[in-house]
Length: 281
Image (tube, rainbow, N blue to C red; front, side, top):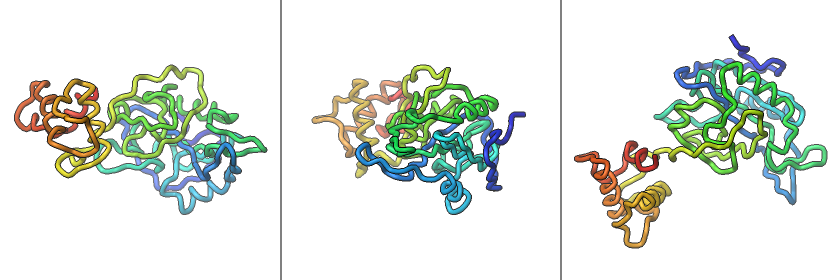
């Protein structure tokens, strides 16, 4: 059996372990601590490693990862064994349990924020750092069966989330690629040997039936309308899609549903998860 604890890491076991959902493929989720807001014009000093250790073993234990990693020194602190969930991502009701998805679901908080300053030099992304100790983390992850791939593509500062990819592919994910979460970190990461080109992004996650209908206004309605137009189902729009739900949205969705040879309540003009998946698939 692979090591439950990263060899050489400082151990700070929090104790409240819980099993992962082993029916899913193993994975790693990468974060940055983002403790300060530096800029290119005004970088800020990196927060001390020991300060973060105290945080994750104290008041911040409810958001603790498996690992805290300093890419400038290679120092690593370990809070949960590999076969337990950790707590660094949001997990809402329904869908997969995001902190538990996989034979292992290893979470790494990288001690970093954009334009942090170390020894007089500022760093815009984790990719710019020395990435000391990364090889040891990757070797440990591989021992648990985590492949050297980014199923949703290598991270950028933009979110890219696909529930389908998350449920079906093991590998490395950024926090900005985890369903049910709003963060966009870790940004560009170091390239490791077998990292290939980014695959085509999967469909956006379904926001839920409650996002659509009379009186609703949100970005998901606009996204829906734009995709309907791209797919050739926008004839009922007089001006174009918007954030506000209207009868034109319902009629266009209904046209799309009828084109799938659906009928009855399956073609009522209100998007459910099947309509959403087929439209964006």
